[in-house]
Image 1 (tube, helix red, strand yellow):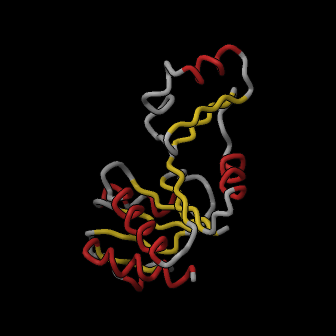
Image 2 (cartoon, rainbow, N blue to C red):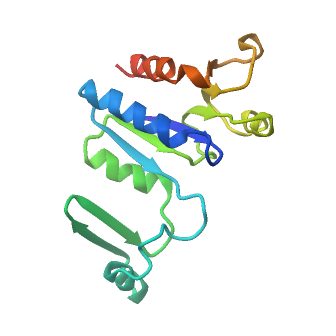
Amino acid sequence: MEIIQIVGYKNSGKTTLVKALIETLADQGIRVASLKHHGHGGAPLGIEETDSEQHRRAGAVLSGVEGDGLFQVSKEQAWDIDQMLAIFRLMDIEVVIMEGFKKQSYNKIVLIRSEEDLHLLNEVTNIKAVLTPLELKQENYAYLVFKKTEMDALVEWISLRIQ
C-alpha cells in the first residue's frame, strides 16, 4: 500500500489537492482511500453525543456505527497511525492519501501559502514536491516545486509515479 501525505497549514489547498488526486487515481482504476487528521483539537464534530460514543465512554474498547455506507469507529484511547492504516490494508487499498499528520515520515507534498509558511519545509521529512504561489527557484531545493497554478501538472506527476 502506497501512502502519500499532503501537508500544509489551514486554507493552503490541501483538500482541493486531495480531491483532485483521488478523482485522478480512481479514474485510473486504483483503489484509493483518504485519511484526514482533525488538527483542531478534540474529537471531530458530531461524534460527542452519538450512541457509539456513549458506549465507548461506558467502557467499550472499540465502538462502531454503520449507516448508509458510513462506518465510524471510536476507541478507548487515541488511534495511532499504524492502527488506522491497518484498517485500510484490510480493505485492499492500493493508495492512501493522508491529509495532515505532518510528523509522520511518509512521502509528502507540501503546500506553502506564503513566506510565513516556508519554515515548514525545514520541519517535515520526505518532501517530494511543493505547491506554492511563491517564486521558489527549483535549483535551491532537492524536490520539485510546482506553482499553485500547476496543480494539474502535480496531480499528473504523482499519478505517473504510482502506476
